[in-house]
Length: 122
Image 1: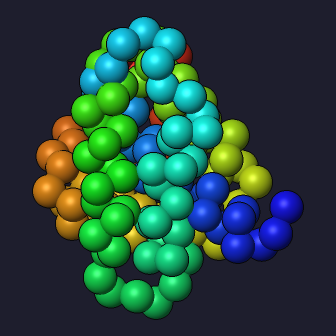
Image 2: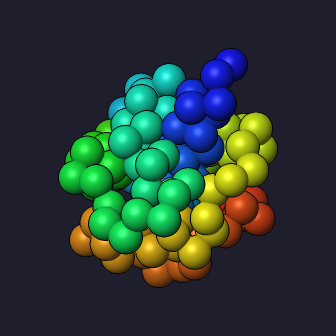
Image 3: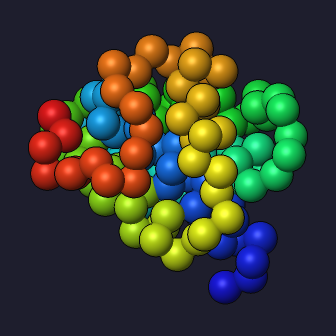
């Protein structure tokens, strides 16, 4: 896998991870890991660089996932996908990942963390 692809996947995982923990929306079994990675790909540059502004495509992807994962199983699936993808990448800035919800206008009642237990996501 090319480094650029890995960076994109890690960024997706981190951003989606916090969305899953918050409580995304969708039909059970509808959200796939490929969809998660695809929606979060635009966030990769922001999460792995010195850029200060979040690309609009990143926020669109986050909002799309937030609207797609409506059930607990879907939110947990997104969470697991994010964990798996993040484990493959190492250059995501955790502070930037934590800032994504606020910068994209998504209110989350928790801090984004790679230590979230996906089985407790509802």
